[in-house]
Length: 169
View 1 (cartoon, helix red, strand yellow):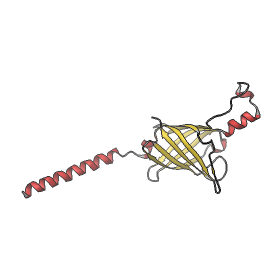
View 2: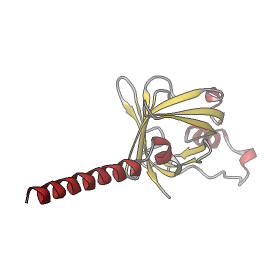
View 3: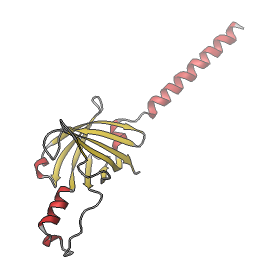
View 4: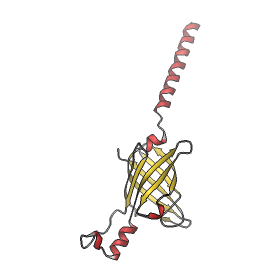
């Protein structure tokens, strides 16, 4: 009877070890989690005295993170004005202002720091040229199909930006 109990206990320990090993191998790295195509859920600038929904309450955006370390990010307000003359090179000052304030795009390369759970965007080109050539480090977390990160830099001065994305693929 004692031998049977020992055999059952050993089998249980082996099964638990195998389950733990399988679960550990199923855990994805941050880089594996962020690779893909993401749709913007929200983008909120937190300043000392207020919160700013920079692209409105329902911003539109896409962020594509390829497995080779390249990214593209495009964000706009939920609606931008049409050019009255149907020619973007002949817009009015009001049209240019609304579109310039209501959109931002950038691309470049990215690096992931697994230990610190950060993604650093190396901005090559941006419609906010002040960001070009910068390394922007963002604290990141992925839970299921939701990726949240904090950008310590804003395009409007002080504060930080909290961004939430939902996986598309």
